[in-house]
Amino acid sequence: MSRELPFIVLCIEEYKHQKSMTGKEVMALFQEYAVCEYIRTFYEALHTMGTRCVVEDIDGYIRSRRSV
Image (cartoon, rainbow, N blue to C red; front, side, top):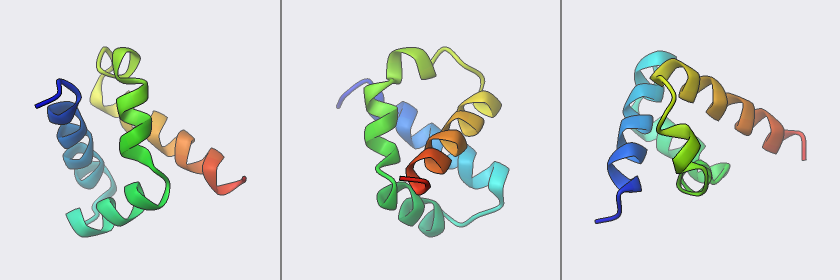
């Protein structure tokens, strides 16, 4: 198992909690915008941040992908 996988699971659960979404909704959103790949790529920086900051960062990433 990669070291990023447990962190990706944490991000999914925290995003679900903070946004009051279901796991299925979060997974659909993360798949649409390749969020898991983003988390894997920037793991070194993201895992040092608090969960609120990580969720805000993911939101910013999704916003940037929507405008492409």
